Image: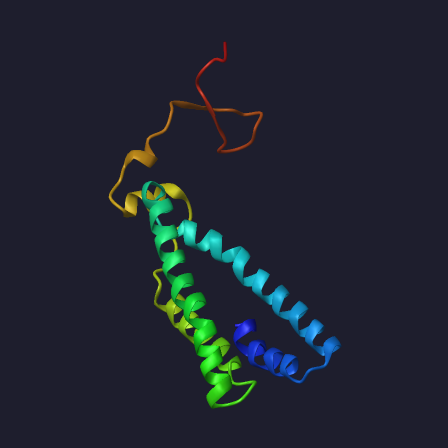
Length: 149
């Protein structure tokens, strides 16, 4: 949401030609991008069952980056030539709206790999070692019932 709102303003500031303003705008957009990118990887990983996670995350992430990142320079150049120097800022707005719509359309996450795996119809992740209660470790904690030799 931050990049969607600040992105057009940031690019407008950069297009004015003031070095200090451009630097501050780049720093602000970098911070907003890192606040978006950090949680994105965790959200993507938790969106898929463990046995399909690598393929599903990499395909979705790479296709999105190829389309958005691959076409952005072409669209930005076209907008600069046909509209104005600050027109590429509309890309932030458009891609931000598409991202928000995608987020609202995505199914809600189930916390914990066991719940995700059972939702996918795979019972392999729910299999556990025999356990016993450890009164020293606290209520509800489990330790493996296996001796280390």
